[in-house]
Length: 529
Image 1: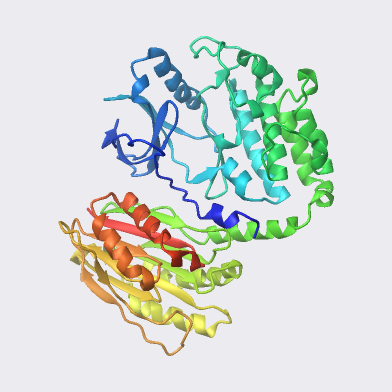
Image 2: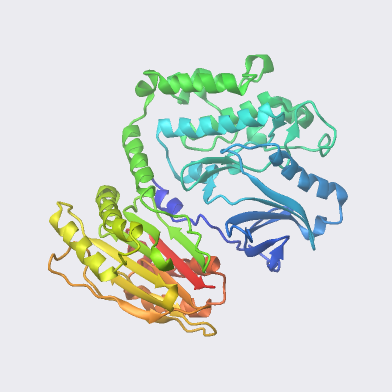
């Protein structure tokens, strides 16, 4: 594992704001129609919150102008300019606009919330295979192509403004200083300002920000390409001879100081890069160990596809979900099921080893689970029975040649009669907080690991589950985390489900033994409405 990878992959993809100094601003209950969960970040002129759409319950990034600027019309116009630019676009590699407008304390922009980290963090702490680098660059280029076709010059393309989502998709963000090509009316006046980031600015943009053009964005992309291929920031120092031979001409043309010698159209850059990607030359240009990186990337992508990480739309429940996973932690399965009579179930499992070799065994287990649940899902006359399910699954695993055992948690919710059942194989307890109380009661279910003993018998634990009650399901071991998590849940039971899931996992991360766990960690919170 390359230096720094473990540290990077333990970073949260749902960051919370931690001020370096002073008191953080008060957390508003609502901004416009959106319920506010937490403060994500604070920049020079804006605050970024995590909000929830009142209709879809999906998370959104809510950006507001800092209070000190709300009485400055020119700053308000500057702030809202970003929303107007994003509104012109509709592309999978560009952040999507949900809404913008005024609220009691100023103006806001509601945008797609992207679960991921910036390309700068990747550059600082992670290496990619050559093909993965080119795939990222092409996605950024496609975003630029869409922007340029709508007359938009980004003017501040840099790694910080490019996000890599959990599913690997690239998103270009931050259009605060974008401009419309050859159109000045209605846009903020930047003529007397230094606009952009010097290390990524073209010579003409440094000379005069108003001179920025489509070719200026291509120059910025050339710098990003150089840095991504080499796996480090350039700080403006470029040595093309360090690049693979087949890329030197392409990146060199993107970085030409003379405008006539540079790419004038992003489509020409895309064409040249795609031709290189498909050519035999790329195999000769692979650095040492590149094929190993590519295999690991393929395993990571396959591993992510095994789980359903999007919260289900269950109208009777408010659900929070938080996941933490480092580079070499694989072998997680998580899924949500809805049966007849409004019965719900959550199945969560991970391999005992939890390393690179876990993806294939977990894929096999996932297939077995889907097969066993097919009849209850499709036949209303076949009730879902957790004990019967665990017994059959254990038998299938023991009969197979999988050299692996599995930890498993199964939570069945029966709103019709206000009950639940919980079955756990090698996992910690389920926590239950009754409405109006602040004590987390642990519901235990001790069973052997799936695949350990073909003759094993299983049992579940039942409980009442009424309106307003809160549940916390997780995949952390009872020792040493059980008492710690029970206390954390009780102290934070009044938080929203999303913030509670984050707080529980954050508290677990502070324990020394957390780093010894080799599987992806997940916390799910459910409150019955």
